[in-house]
Image (cartoon, rainbow, N blue to C red; front, side, top):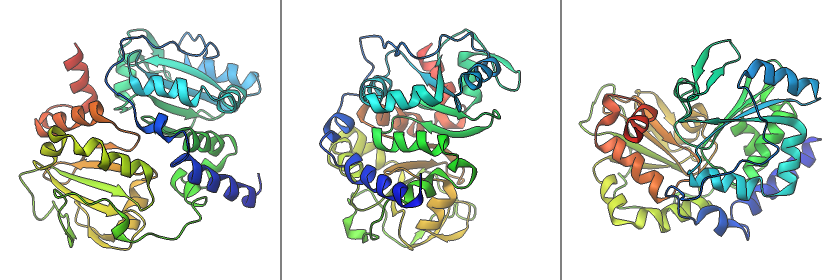
Length: 336
């Protein structure tokens, strides 16, 4: 695909993908666990979970690599991926043509042989990969290298961009963030285009926890103007009193990821909002990054998020559970 075609296509994805006619189906849904168990598409591979063998079989079939899908049968976001994204024939056909998809049950006890030969249960494999949210997808290329990881649910348009980013080898030359940014083709929006909240701290943004530790965790909202998903977060999810109250227990700031607003990071580095977002690899808005009182990143929510998931994350943070175990371990213990 030539660069001009790529820019036109990415511009189409951004214009229609985040504010198109199907945005209601993408962003407005009940994300509590589903009563009905999820069925995977019949074209997902029936695997013995030897990923090295799976990769070789995919390459022998003329494919680019494999996608390891981490999911749960009752996960509303997993249902959304199957019904909305893979429910589109173009996305399903493109995925089938270029990848074998290997499903992993994050609570499962089957043994997985990783590409390096390590043997773990599905549950232990998920924790070892540090995947906090379902669905998560790891893309592996022909050499067995991780080309991209997606944590959580993304709408069809950036999801299709992710597929093409790997298939066309752009991951070898640039970050996914930069790849998407080349298709935005928009002016930088002013700060007033962002949704304000009364729990946001005003500038200047000196977030330095290395010299000035706090007794509270910090959450940084990375957003941008003209962001439909940001509007949904503020207009719906953050309107729930229980969720709003949780944010008052945190130090909360909002940054426009495309602005040159000066920022001192939790590690004490002087930078700008734009440069910090770039260094962090933020490509989706809104993204919420949580830091402990000493400035270490605890967790990030950088995909579509609704009421149930955000309440769970805030419970983990504000209960102080992050001091003892990772989010994945905490969820596993709560489930058991």
